[in-house]
Image (tube, rainbow, N blue to C red):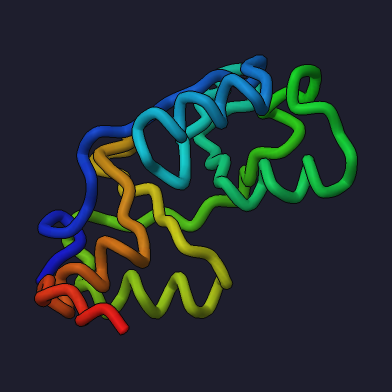
Amino acid sequence: MLVRDAMSTVILTVGPAHTLRQAAALMSARRIGAAVVLDPDAGGIGILTERDILNSVGLGQNPDTERTHAHTTTDVVFAAPTWTLEEAARAMAHGGFRHLVVLDRGEPAGIVSVRDIIRCWAPAREPAPAL
């Protein structure tokens, strides 16, 4: 199975001047764990994850004043839609992250997460019985 079969093609994009609270609210409303940060002045595409927001709040920083640009990962590992899920999982395990931005012809085409890969590898089952 390929990344294009597992990735989400609905991408949340935010700008570098969004506050962490704004980004968190948008991510929460969509029930996603990462947003693509488009910063034309910095020359590219970054990613902001729920962990980035959690780390900021854990340090006592104010999510109403902290801007996404200060917490964005800019040395992003990108996946191609034609990667296998094994290649994506290997890149995630090697890099220690849970999301990959998928680029197609240099443009964001989707995001694939560990959860997306697991969903493909382990089809949904009946809920476990209550104890």
